Length: 296
Image (cartoon, rainbow, N blue to C red):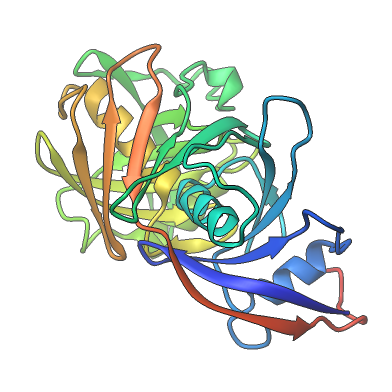
């Protein structure tokens, strides 16, 4: 099967975008993995699929598959690229669109400077909804909020890390670190991602606070590994930093990732998180997807 695609990136977080507004390709897990493969496919952190509106009042449906082929609830950098794609492809003339994702409705807005602002919705803190199930393990107070200890079976010895947990439509565990560049992301990331307290797995964030309006962030994404940027992870980190009393609310906090800078603003409990950043088309093409891909 031969299908068209568009390669895009937002702050280095890269995507293959598929247009299914006219017909569906009928792809499965193995096909999504193939598209994301950087040696045999196109190469991407996630595959984004554009579909027609599922209900009145919504402009499009937005599906996200990670590089491992699994469907996930949310992708903030992907949401910006989604908005740029539907506008550039002539699928809408709107600057502000409403998009249905598995994690809820988001509202990207294209700005005159080429960036895109996304209303990422209200963060979720109820543990069962994240979901986060710590059992009888107690939390530890920090700045009026909670951090949770996670026991990680690292080589040679066990390590305990403390994380703040929040959902931005997808689950995040945010850890404070002294030096983001030196943080053991590749060692601890997979262990946090698959920790048994997170039944749906989790995105692991490593946040260094520089001042009350600036952080450095690395994220080990669920099903993708470390990426150059993670939009929902940036939102989760800023929300956690505000709740822990380390960052300012109701004003842009600048999140520096290895792929670029994102601006995140959150006014506090009950308010949506607003994310602004770049969205760029890299190239377009077609690819032949083999019929005999293994499902394992």
